[in-house]
Image 1 (tube, rainbow, N blue to C red):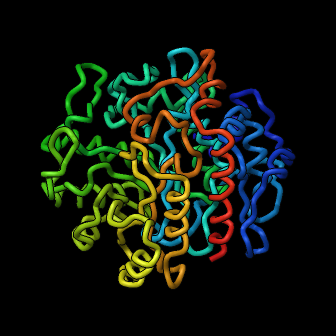
Image 2 (image 1 turned 135 degrees about the vertical axis):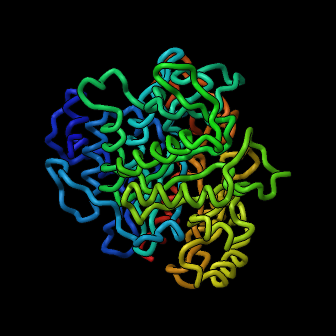
Amino acid sequence: MNNNCVNKLLISLCYSTKLEPDIWTKERTYHSIGCFNSKKWVANIIPFELLERNLKQTVDSIATLCESNIFYEKFPDFIETPDYGDNWGRLANYTELNNRAIAKMNSDRTCCGIFSCIKLLPAIPPSAKSWANCVIISQIFPNIYGDSYNKGPFEENSIYGIKLNAGYSRNIIDYGITDKISPEEQLKAFNDLSHFRGIKTGFRTVISADQIKVSYPDKEDETFSWCNPEHVEIYINESVKLMNLGFEAMFIDSAKHIGGYDCEHYTGVGDLPEYHQMQYILNEIRARSGKTTISFAGEKSSDDFERYRLMGLNAGTDFITGDDFYAVKELSEKLKYNRVYAPGVEIENDNYEGGISYEQRLNRINTALFAYYRASDKLPSFMQTNDLFPLRYDTNTHHIMMTNPSYSQDGSAESHWENLFAKDDGRFYNHKVAELFAHALCL
């Protein structure tokens, strides 16, 4: 694999690798308050303004936002992940980007979602002095319900069904240029650009057996089974491959119910791994990738803190929202000696179907960023795309996880990007979020 996958990506798309300062970015740059204004990102924007730019403009923008204030005319050959220690996931802010929803949609086909994630990177606040910001991408493996197609707004095309041992989703990768740059190199380019921005990265995965298929070149797909050692090996190895491309976090859907825990509230389909089996799997992913820095975050895994810490998790969702600032602050104080695992503050989750006002959302983000006595003791937090870039009013986070509609008025990708998100009020909301991060990033 070419070490400089960013340059390889630019060449594959017929762009120059010589970078130039980006005036558009400079006109929209927000700075951290303190830290010599070193932490920078663009805000007071709507996503269309970023998504309609080409990838060369995006890389120029990312270079322009360099925290060191050094402008690199060539993208560096070697980029290290932001270093926040082995247990960075215990403190991190996780933001899930639905890369399928922001992918390039032409007519009824969907592709290049990883490029859209790259285009949004300039508008993602970088990590703070005391804790990391981490982007989780919603889909990376092929979708078993209709990969690479967009359908009507009420036709099921759930992102929660994945196919292993079959490469990466056509919703995400540009397979039109794989003779020049492989799918793995496209993913590595995203990770290198994220790390250059001071952002960690991860991906969502599922563990409900009937929501996973295993693909083979010489026979029919098989439904996944946790009792099949070959399937378990494939699950581990697929995760390790991603970690070796630069991802450092895995968000585990339905993690609360592993080992049959509280299954009266389980809404997935199919068997789940046993508790000790999941301990083994998470340990093996760390060991085989050679990474001690991997963060495992579990959906709703926050009732029995010690249970999830011993499983190998670093953070869990859905224990407390950000509605009560002082309740979160006291929970942070109570758990300050738990340095490996903590429950997270939830602004919005992937099951959100509407009902949270902009004001309530901003209050929750304020709580997530500031509800502690010391920044080194903050709780992790979880946000969705909608929390940075509000969606249009007739859709919501869960809807675009369960379906893959195009909102284009003329069949073009640009029209979909323009109409997927709220406009003037979305821009003002994005500005208000940026004001909160500006005060937080130097803590």
